[in-house]
Length: 251
Image (tube, rainbow, N blue to C red; front, side, top):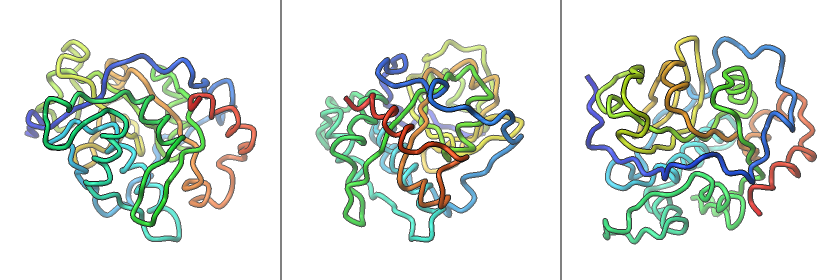
């Protein structure tokens, strides 16, 4: 049995940012998403990115997303080290390394706005900048599946129950949302069982019932990293129009 009770969380719980445009108003999802999608098998390992000792999950999720996208390009994967991830977390949350009293977590939306603004320092120089973000209703399973299939991932906020500390697959739904705390994970695939996320240096599966019970916010991300990965606008999207609409959150 997995024991994650010693791991850090770090997402400040909040509703989706009202400045984030709703993806459903910007994009007509395919009529049918595939039954399963895998945007993770090319990633050889998932670094911890300091989330075992610091509540930097909102920043670690960005590091994992950048690495995941770039594993699907013709270039070497871009892997942020712990220092770079912690610097991002500090810039957004005010965390002072070595001072646990300042490790108070961060809002998903604040992290995404910073990524769209100053950008994220990466080993190849950077900054890596996000073009835009749009919210996806967690309860709309079809939209969640279509967004992961099209954009490569979803950046999500969970209100984890205490039972999630010891589950190999997050499945139980009897405990109160947030009874453990808030956590941020990217979804990098799904199957008939449920979404597949990245957290604490590994893939983590959950059931669709668990997702329904504990997902509070989800964002589709638009990035040049993913455009290069596919070689074309995903699913024939109007890249320019979607990018213009999606930047509203960064204002």
